[in-house]
Every structure is written in structure tokens, then in C-alpha cells.
Length: 294
Image 1 (cartoon, rainbow, N blue to C red):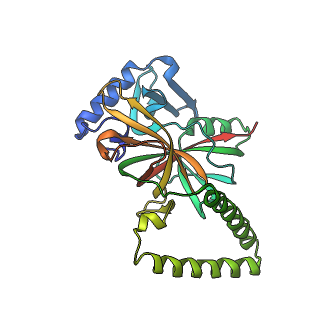
Image 2 (image 1 turned 30 degrees about the horizontal axis):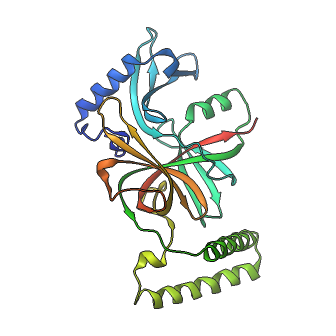
Image 3 (image 1 turned 90 degrees about the vertical axis):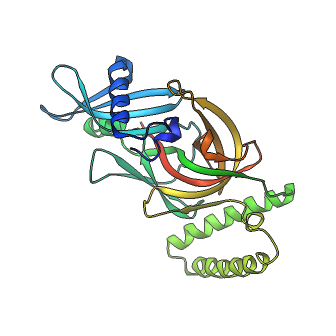
């Protein structure tokens, strides 16, 4: 079972034979508009069935189509699509070792790390590569799938504090860019700032709650490279309903470290009531749609 299948409203599917039956039913019921096929060579093809459970949410089923037009599912991936530009930073795409899946690597200076995500539009990428079209990435729409999260209250800030935070983030991004290019003064400045920040947090944490000090956070979590622990402000909220199970899924538009992306989580896995202005805290599996130039 895919760990994040419950995120798109299939929490009741726990057994292997139940999931296999679900995949077969979704494949058999698929219309031609839901099926994409790429002929890799004379004997091999890659087929994708997009089974939509709600607008921009569902399960992608991958496999091969035989000579009789029957699709044999090999693996599946739950998906939720975000339509907000998350980052236009330099992006490279590489294939996973085990199967025909791909990961994107974003050099996201605003986040402060190299961000790795699971490529959602793998068929488009594979087709472009086969046709020798441009695979340069213009920007990426990111969406995180979560199976555990909670809602926490926002940090109260004045308009002046918000503006100062934006200026500080812009300056830090410029310093990181300069440090990457070998600027020793920028490296030294960043080191001193980190030491000062650590000192300030150590003093404040003695008297304040940690979530009043940390406004937002974006950091790798666990041993898998595309999973992150995030805290971000909720900008917009929508409830999606799985058409088969009737389970409700929250689609939260999040701003974290000056980057906007969506987070999807099953209603029963979220502690607290989400509202615009509050914060989401949880672990996510990051996937993204790469928008190609040309």
C-alpha cells in the first residue's frame, strides 16, 4: 500500500487484495481521455491511467497495455495538483533507479536548501524527451501530501514587522546566492547571523513557546529525500470529497518561507480546525508539476 493513499480519501483500503481490486476497477472504468500511452520501443510501452476522485485529486496508475488493449497495472501514485507557482529557481530532473519515476531538484534559496520533489507530470517529461523537445523547466507548482498534521495559531505581527521580515528574507537570499558563488564576506556574514540567531532563540525559549518564536519552517524529515517537516500560514482552504469513499480531504494553500504551495490531508488525519490566517504544522511528501519552456 502506498503510504499516502489515505491522503486522497482511501483510508479504508488497508489490504493488498482490496487495493488491487480498486486499481483494476479504476483501470477498467477509465475512459480514453483518462489514458495516456507512450511507445518506448517496438515491444514496450508506458501507460498512465488518471483516475480522478475529485477536481485535481486522484490516483495515477502506471503499467503496460497489451496487444488486446488491456492495461496491466504495475504501480500507482496518489496525486493532488496545485496551480500556484511555487518556485522559478533552477530545476534539474533525474530518473529513480527502480522504475519509470522521476525526481526534481530545485535550488530554492528562499527555503535555504536544495528542495527535492516527486515529478507528477512524468508522462509529459518522458514524451518531450523522446520527441527531443525542450525539457528546460520554467517554474514548478508544488503540492505536499500529508498523513499527519495539526493546526496552530498564528504569531501576532504588526504590518511593520511583516515588512521587516520580508526585507530580511530578501537580504538573506542575496547573501546565500553570493556565498554559493564563493563570496567569503557573505559566508562570514551568514555564519555570524546563524550564531546570533541561535543565541537569541536559546534565550527566548526559556520564557516563550517555541511556536511563537518559529513563525514558519521548512526542513527535511526522515531518511527519504522528498519528505519535509513544515510550518506555514494558511492562505486559502478548500474541501475535496472522494467520489468513491465520500471521505473529505483538506486542500490547504500554504505560505512557508516566502514560498507558496498546496498541502492535502485527509480530514480525519488533521488535528484542529483549519482557517485562513492560522498555521499548518505537519510532515509532507512533496510532489510537483514542472512547467516546461517552449
